[in-house]
Amino acid sequence: MGIPLDQALSIGAYVLKQHLTGRKRYPLVLMLEPLFRCNLACAGCGKIDYPDKILNQRISVADALHSMDECGAPVVVMAGGEPLLHKELPEIVDGALAKGKFVTVCTNALLLEKKIDLYKPHKRFNWSIHLDGDKEMHDKSVCKQGVYDRAVEAIKVAKDKGFRVNINCTLFSDAQPERVAKFLDDVKTLGIGGITISPGYAYERAPDQQHFLNRTKTKQIFRDILKRGRGGKAWPFFQSALFLDFLAGNQTYQCTPWGNPTRTVFGWQRPCYLLGEGYAKTFKELMEGTDWDKYGTGNYEKCADCMVHSGFEASAVVDAVKRPWKIAAVTLMGVKTDGPMAPDIPLHNQRPAEFVFSRHVETKLAEIDEAQALAKKPVAAE
View 1: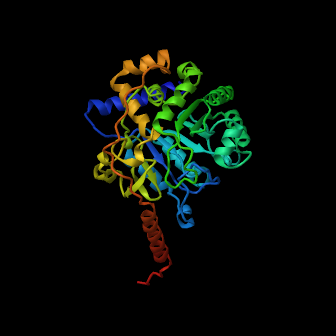
View 2: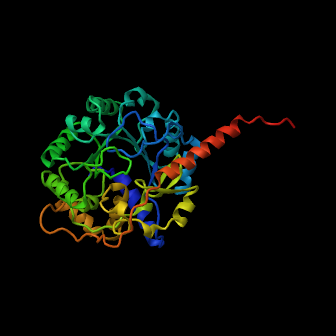
View 3: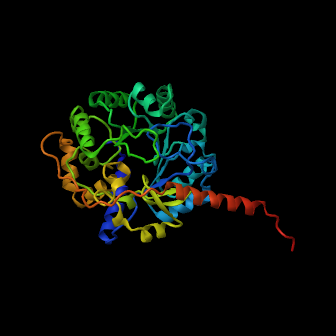
């Protein structure tokens, strides 16, 4: 696996402590989105469809660091949008490292060569470069030619400067298992530290709604891919082996949305990184004021086909700590890629989808307008 031993041991100890103290819900990874603005417009992305007034918003350094303290998760993943567009991101990264966090910055790498000298290599820091397959696959995914070549060049530059570099890969319904396996072989030769792979989530605002995977096709595609890599043992995955086992249909997991709580310019996002159904002002309010049972596969229509790592990686990690023999078996033998699949969660009782995007946008725009009006209001002399 591509997870450094110190990180695996630290997170394992953290989870074990929560388990032994009887804490039912706790975060593993803080998903920090310091902005929504991006320099790409990918057809499968539902993160950037906002008016300019919202795209121009930024989470401040102070608010970002306070969110880390509020949450307490041992890992901080900074995403977006394109986080390298945030001018104060180097300060946020340094602050997170000073707090002892394991830090990942997700980026499409278009700005990485220009910005990289603002950052320093650290044993708890890594870049996660977005690559959705080989050159043709990735450039098609991001809707722009030449992005793959620039990302690969940025990987080489970052490695030459001493950084740990991972890649993150999202797969859609047109994924060809043999071709994906060849891509994973190729990126391994670049000397990357780890691979994060996941099926795409069907964002309601994504321009392309035709290429998202359903659960049945997800499981078969991942079986066909992992079969070509000795059950996944051929590649350095930056993920739990049990999450890969879940993707291949060998585990029945309900998602753990509080495992990867998300902080955006709107606040703490309910219920998860993928769904913006509401927002809380504090992490405590998020955890205690969210009706978690309303969400998840079998509970909510929008969750029906989701098998994304931001929801299920935490489920796999918790299972590994509670039942270490399961992850030991998968690590030793590889992911099972044939035979019967584990039963899936029935969907007949799920509630229908609600569509609330416009309401949240209107509320945020009103907040921005009010704040701008107050900033312009003259202060009376005493």
